[in-house]
Image: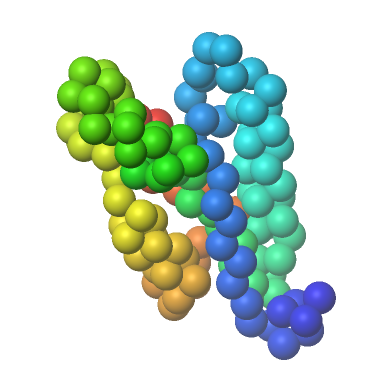
Amino acid sequence: PQMIERRSGKIVGITSASALRAIPQLAVYTAARGAQNAFIQCVGAEVAPHNVQVNAIAPAFFRNNTYFTPEMLADPETHDQIVSNIPAGRMGEGTEAGEAALALAGDASNFFAGQIIAFSGGWAT
């Protein structure tokens, strides 16, 4: 409400690209992330007339100890299997996600409203 009142604000959500492309055996997780994406899209459209931007980054396949342990990535076979799914041929880095979030939090996103930006090296396009 304060952003609407002052007619200025940015909200950057972090969701998941899993809701943008089906992954067998992850129906519940994907459905939850799909709901989150739909929320971002609807709220983004609702607050856009008030000069408030609500958007999200939807990562997949980036270096993150929660999803890919150092042991997994140290194993060449596992690493190669993971990377084989990514058109960019590599995993994303946390700093890249941070820079994307900064772009959405700054003036570069003034015309974005309810966008879900896939951060997946081409896996979800």
